[in-house]
Amino acid sequence: TPEAPPSLLDGLDPDQRAAAEVVRGPLLVVAGPGTGKTRTLTHRIAHLVQDQGILPERILAITFTRRAADEMRERLVVLLGDVGARVPAMTFHALGLLILREYGDRAEIGIAVERERVQLVAQALSVTERKATQLCAAISRWKRRVARRAEALQRPPDEYPPGSDLDRAWAAYEEGLAARNLVDFDDLVTLAVELLESRPDVLVALRERFVHVSVDEFQDVDERQYRLLLLLAGEPQNVCAIGDPDQAIYGFRGSDVSFFFRFREDYPAASVVRLGKNYRSTRTIVDAALGVIAPSPTVGERVLRPLIEDRSRIVTHEARTERAEAEWVVHVIERLVGGTSLFSMDTGRVGPEDGEGTHAFGDVAILYRTDAQSHALVEALRRSGMPFQRRTHDRVLERAAAMAIVRSFVASHTPGAPLGPSLQTAAARVREEIAAPQGPEDAAPLAPAPEEGAEAPAFAEADVDAALVVLLAIAARSGEDAERFRLEVALEVEVDTWDPRADRISLLTLHASKGLEFRVVLVVGCEDGLLPLRFKGREDEADVAEERRLFYVGMTRARERLFLSYARERVRHGKPAATEASPFLREIEERLVTEETADLPKKGPDPRKKQLTLF
Ligand code: ATP
Ligand code: MG
Image (cartoon, rainbow, N blue to C red; front, top):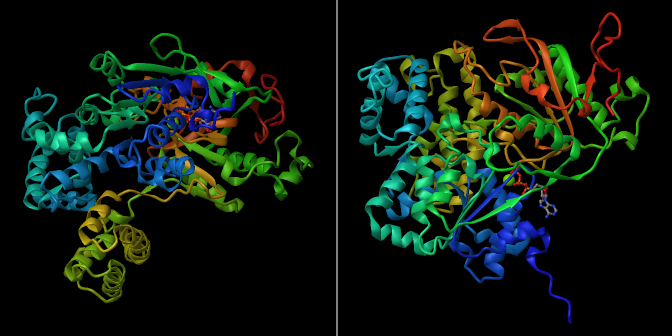
């Protein structure tokens, strides 16, 4: 018999292939980290297009971040060529906006950015911007639980007190947004759901448009997102949910892992596929991660079989202070990347024999629980001269300068004219404003928040440049459509400046590391109080279960080497305090761990600790 032609699905193992070959009806894929869930999802979509002849435009792929959506599209282009770019891959928010714009008679809709929200509340209640910012955050938290204030008012008064600052702020906020024809980010999915529930014609149109709907990282859906998913999945219910309950880390934001179980109830006929092979990490890393997640409840057996055997160990390190910890991090990376003076001075060995000197900067990620921890790291990395990038959700477009550019653009742009030159003019005008000596009233639109202090104007100048770069990129995407530009700007509130392909050390929070992988991962701050995290004033409480999953997510980002460090003393909430190692570390089997003592200037060798080199 002639050889079968190569198929798209050859890149999948039999279990993954079984999932990808379910081309009709509901499908649930439940599997641990690094088992190829995202890979399976991408191949399945490619299979639907290439082998099943489904138009790419009709296959909706939902992700949780814009970056993940871009990555999915890129992977599809690799598999399918240019056709792959036509698959609509987008976030729930972007989907909500698309539905409202194209089907909701709300083409005029605008999205309120943080600054507008804060100003609205500050003015309505005559409070400081700082207070208004807190109130806005509280409103957002509530809106993720109940979409409307009216609903919150039905709660018991000890939970939601009517007439409280929060309540008055929310009332003013709802009124203010409505008066300006604005919605906020939290509203997008809610309003889309309401539209689909009240307009059967729209529902039919959308179901005809998207004949397949898939969602990756399904463990992180919230109630409204789940409802939207259900609504979109018409007959024959071509809905595919892929995720890992052990990686549910957004409970604090209203995500609810119980939708996994709901999915099986709502779709009793769903095909359920489990993947059990971990392609990403070495056996050492998988075993250690399994130790950490073991106490977490699970349905059935938790299967994660490593395919990569190794003999290296996980390195834990105790530093005296946060600063010493950061210096140790630098030291480790210098040794991994090799060729630096510190490295050769220290060990006298340069070479690939033990994994030393075989890594690029881009292979390394430093993960932490809270953004505040990045400062010591950034300082130490700066001193070392090694290239790094921090993944922040930089709110470039929320700063005053960006708002002023957009405002001045809207005021002066001629419809149909190219956007770029118009933006340049607007930016020039804002620059002039900053440069001109101003009375306090004139300065108002650009006034910094009070706590930003005297340096703010200099900031604003740099902000203009940063904002202009982002705005021009959006303009390029929008063609000459100013309305589309305005909406894209609103969706782009959080600009992710992190570049996965850059040869730089990545600094990111554990949350931001979800879905990613790196050859080397260092998790810093493995301390009780940070992992699990306890908030100021609520020191007794911690959502230990969710924090455990978060640590598990972090550990399982590593492909080859994992380093875990903690400091004995850390400044938290403004004062230095003694700390204990994270209880999660005790969950890792001893045989998998080397305790590193390299930079600890102790009186003598600590007999409890093995004096081992890193590699
Ligand atoms: P996470 O839960 O962290 O999101 P995941 O289950 O989505 O992980 P992927 O990111 O899809 O896992 O895959 C993990 C790694 O394993 C990737 O580098 C991927 O290319 C590789 N991989 C997955 N399946 C296979 C396979 N069948 N053959 C070769 N490599 C694979
Ligand atoms: Mg994934």
